[in-house]
Image (cartoon, rainbow, N blue to C red; front, top):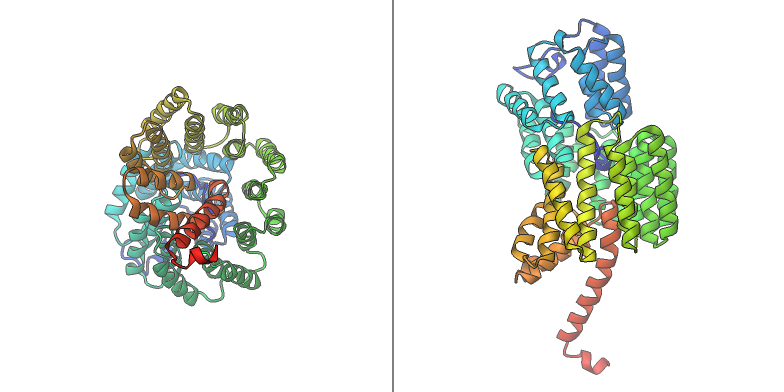
Length: 498
């Protein structure tokens, strides 16, 4: 799975065990649709999602609800897997409106997804927990629990046991091995990640996604040549698997070959869906930041924001403005772009509130960081309070909580409260900006060993996001110079070479 393809999936966990899987699972949920055609499309959609043929899966879910417009669970599945925020909202409303015809367990799932989409996470989690407790042998329940925890809530440590449970229920459930590998890679356990991804590839050798996943984890490990090889193997198996085309762009970007990256991104964007075109254009725009061509970056991000605005992808429009704000040299320009991003998110849009709230949290976090960099204590405190209120109103939203931890850490650093900063930043230790600050906090707090270990991890951080582009390349240069100086001072022969 190309994880960044799914990073803006909104919604929350759902549980299901289709009648098609009843021969495997003692406990199964039978869909209530009375349309054999709708049921067949639904099953095919699930099978396609297991192999990460996302667009085919979505089309099958669309066909299912077209065959039976009253198929509430079909609408909710389409909402969950779609990355198009307007489609998410429309399908959620249809699912809620038709839920009266659903069976008892389908209603539980519909409430679960509907609450999460509307940022009502406490009742959503209550429904999730009830489903997990009631159906402990439902492998698809745990599979999607893991998806949600890792991709929507950024909690790989909690997701991994879900996928391990799926493997216990059905060792031949291929995608459980795939998803578990991503969890372990995010936790830094690359040996376990490669073990699981090799098992996945052996189970479905004729599918493109195992090679794509092998490539992505190789890239995360800094094995760029291996990543390129596996992405090309994926495309050889299935030339339409455009996530691997995107992966080529990501890899070249991280290798420092930005012009080549833009060529590969352009090919992926040309073949993508409308929402993918916008998402992937954001990644392409970041290549100009890595090049240091900020004027070109402004032009590319502005064009992407305009495209998102036309399509009413408000969260992506705001992300484009926020990304632009992060590399501006002048505070006034940066804060102006953040104000523009926030204004977009407060407008009326056909986008789930949960998606808007999550992007707003990141916008506020970025404003706190800018205020701290400018020494503006009043703005930092006021914006942090705004973010705290947002987190309080959206209890149990992992994405918002992580943004709050990052912002709180930045304010604690400004106040010289290094022990507090360590505690906050450790809750946001997969963000390059927080990682850089955490290294300083460790040093100030007398935790040199932790600082050295995190420095090595940050230098090897290969995730194609704007934060990485802004932090890691420069950090690598500084760290290399520091290590060279240290090694020279320890070498007794150094003075004779001067």
